[in-house]
Image 1 (cartoon, one colour):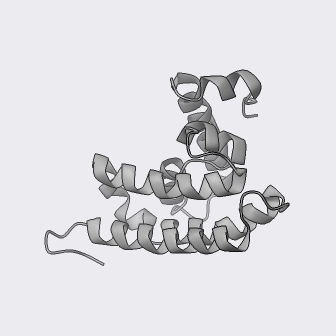
Image 2 (cartoon, rainbow, N blue to C red):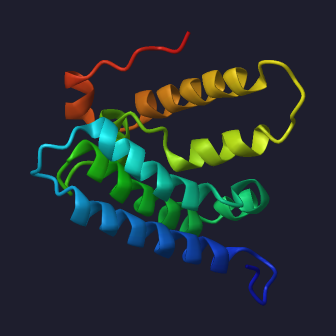
Length: 157
């Protein structure tokens, strides 16, 4: 989907709306107070993540705008809150750490870099780099300080 200005804002909106519908369906299947474990929630949330990631390597440049970053992050935050059974007052950073889900901006960057196929071990190298970036973002974030005190995020390899 390309809009009249030849950018992918329309596609970002469409992907976020479609992912939000899948997240709401997940909420109906597994309410926060039910006894479902987070691994089952994460499995179902992977569908929403795939919706957000579809076409990501092509429209990654649209994440340069604050509006699109916020739109994707807020949609991903809904999914992470469902996986972690977290309250709406938890920060995005803290919810991603609790759910064990790498933030969507880092995942999309990793997907874009994975386009270079044929190099042995490239996926593992990219994942290590993504984990290091996530760790750096978590260390430098002012949000989620209480969660940081409770959960020590281990350094990648």
